[in-house]
Image 1 (cartoon, one colour):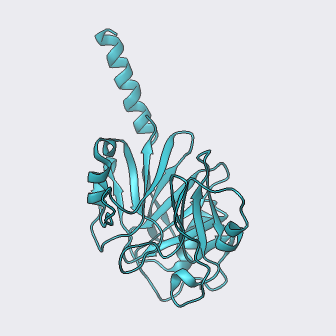
Image 2 (cartoon, rainbow, N blue to C red):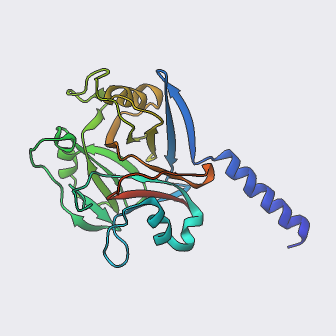
Image 3 (cartoon, one colour):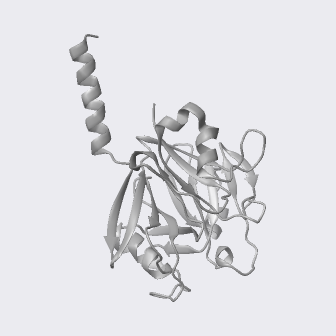
Length: 245
């Protein structure tokens, strides 16, 4: 290929990146949210919890190191399902079709156990979905990737029955919503918000029918093209989305 042809390829690649930003800022009800999209036809999604030695990754910086050269293809990453003090998943965790932690249907205190809780999962076809834990338990096919958290923010377009419209608890929070074509929208608030506002943003701002709360207080985002890699408390499971090669 000549220099002119190579230049055209580079220009086309740059235009594609400009037209397909990994994350964007949206404002809803006076609050700012960062929205990062996973699209199965363009991107690859993985979950990560431990490094090759079996130790928890703990931070987005260690996730980047764990990925090695693949880190150059990362669109974004953030904390995924909730975790125990030892950073192990509280509930279901599946990586590359391997069940590392089973579905947790126990009753206990805390956000994770505020039923219905739910599962974010990606099938072998790359399509993403969010379902209540009860609905997920009725599935007959195993996913390629899955993480459990709680509570559900939206179920069939309806807010979780225990979520107040705009409760007093305000935290930086993140969650994930499912789209109609197997895509997923990951959201992190840019300031403290209530559960209700986050849920309404998924429904009224993004058009999601099903959405799952991932966490608050610990919520962190790595968005390389935005020059952002948050620091904070140690993390358990993380989700990472990469450009396809």
